[in-house]
Length: 119
Image (cartoon, rainbow, N blue to C red):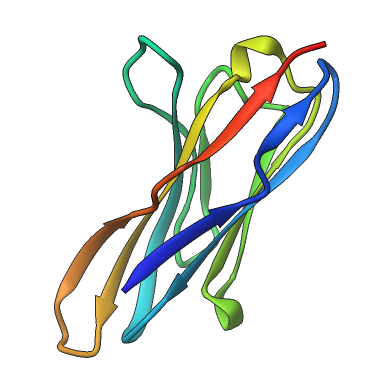
């Protein structure tokens, strides 16, 4: 089982990006899907999460600017980031709780995608 993130890049302040994270492999079901980020020199922090029921939570610094959604048919979670600020610059990581075909509950991390907000 693996996660692959995409959609990062360089964007000017006020711009938008949409990140995607696809889970692949021997998966039976997917639970909570979460985005974290880690800026250089800082600890990893919660950006947004979404449960299998569609309930979402957001870090205080991104509320009102970011949205999270999921497509269970594609094993994919999205992070729509609007009105980006230089403080949003970080490596963004996807984290998924899932059950594999051996019926094990697993906590999987992606390798991250860089988001840079700069003029």
